[in-house]
Length: 158
Image: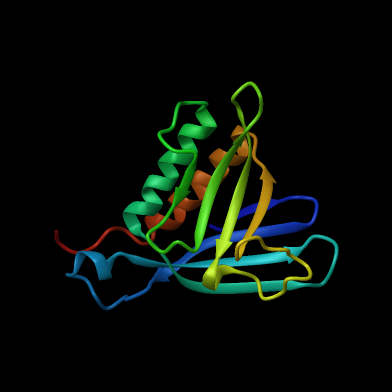
């Protein structure tokens, strides 16, 4: 179930596409690498870009789901940014003066960067997109990632 976020310029979709190594089941690290698919569309235009690459381990996505649910509930979190072993995608909470999460910055790096610098500027080789994320949006995002992750459970032995 793709996670979809929209702002005034872009619609971003993110989903788990599968295991990077579907035939590896015993090695804990390799068995749990997931490929992430990111699609980015202009809201008012015909431009569309999509990429799929290894992006996270199963337990990192599980941790991200928990982090998003904590943010949605207004609970304290240990870190304001959630990243993965492959530092290609990171999510950063943006808070208002009262301390409530009002947005997420989605940082796209390396393989997950859109190819054009004209449509999407970058700073320090990072594309940052901000999306308004009230609690219900954060919860939808957590539930979407959890539904994806249910299709790709942890495998292998310690």
